[in-house]
Image (cartoon, rainbow, N blue to C red; front, side, top):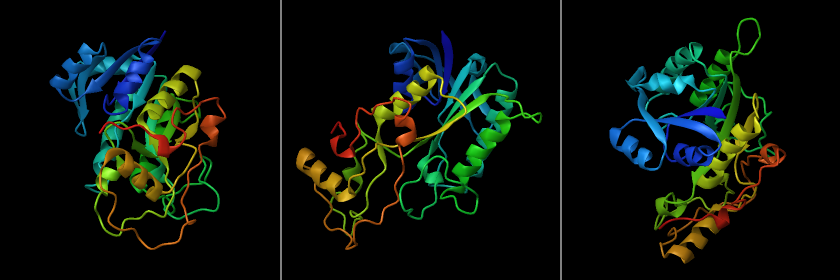
Amino acid sequence: MNTVSIIGLGWIGTPTAHLLKDSCQVIGSTTSSEKQAKLASEVIKAVRFSLSPHPEGLGFNALFQSEILIVNIPPRTRTGDGTFHLEQLKYLKSLLANSAVKKVLFVSSTGVYPSENLEGKYAEDFPLSLENTGHDTIFRAEQLLEASATLSTGERNYDLTIVRFGGLLGDDRIPLRYFTGKENVAGHTRVNFIHRQDAARMLAWIVEKGLWNQTFNGVAPRHPLRREIYEKLSRETGMAPPASYQNEPEGNDRLISSEKILATGFEFDFPDPLDFTYVV
């Protein structure tokens, strides 16, 4: 039975733990004793751990005794220049260097791709650099984990798979909530969303199928217009739609490919963001 640690039992980490706990020995981290107690009631073992950016907590060394480590600590993109997040990962790198971990699954973002639109879709083999990335902190984070995974001899210190998720929605994250009643909303572009349930299922799938030393995009394979999603949600929830939309032509979209994960046999429960389920 695989042993799996999940750093970050949050909105994605917790359902991932539930999916894995029947086939793996799972332990995870949370930052509060209240959340720790709640997770215990759900039969999920958790220890208190945070990177502030140096490691803090109680008994967190247990996280680094597992064979597999899922790292789900997104950067604080709305504040700072990304330095804090990179410092967090440097401390994590030090913990990994002296651990039993052999495989790391790192949760990243499609924000790493250039902000410019592309003819076709951005795929995992698109050549990224600091000059063209859409988010230099995310790019540097991926590079840092990749560099620490490879020894100076060229051998692997640990196997590394990176998952780049698109917009994480579903359940209590309702996209219309952020735009209801607002003026001049962008409704003409197509989306790169993934439902929470599929995001958790994708992480569990990678662990269970042993898909290591790869990079995967995590986005639903269909890309409806934002306006279509907002209007449908308004009809279904009673929330007011945007008061007005930008007067821009359709068809100029920055799209992300999901073909690589589909080729592994993974099937989305929610392939179309128009059919995402929400809790109002």
